[in-house]
Length: 200
Image: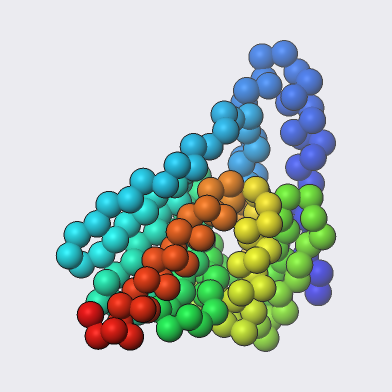
């Protein structure tokens, strides 16, 4: 079953042409449309004996020195949490979405990811792992790197899904700072992997 896109284009165009309303944000089904200044993607790094942290825009990346790897997080204004994680051993990226309180995804309907104005990429249900009875979902590792390449290719993500009980929803995320931060995380993973191989 293909997921239908909520119709927002006409509403956004109407607001853009009405005096006094051009700066108003339009929020529908977890998607936020708004005129904003360019996001500052300067990476700010901190750390201690236990972990290292990097921030860029709204993104936060944490690498646990004695843990399994690094994780990147971005929470949007509607309360959706996009999570990207990778282990030190060089395995594929794990891509996951946590829904806001009170929302559940019908994982059996699959999902669609669209970056910028590109072609929607459907994830069949057999490539999704249900977590917490639809309150969170993760793509299977087999397609993790493919999805990560997709996310790094643009500036905006729309994650579309079917609600448990019916109805379509979408979560929108700003990807502007992801490419630079993900590259920094991959360098850190490589460094940590080398240190472990040396027994340090």
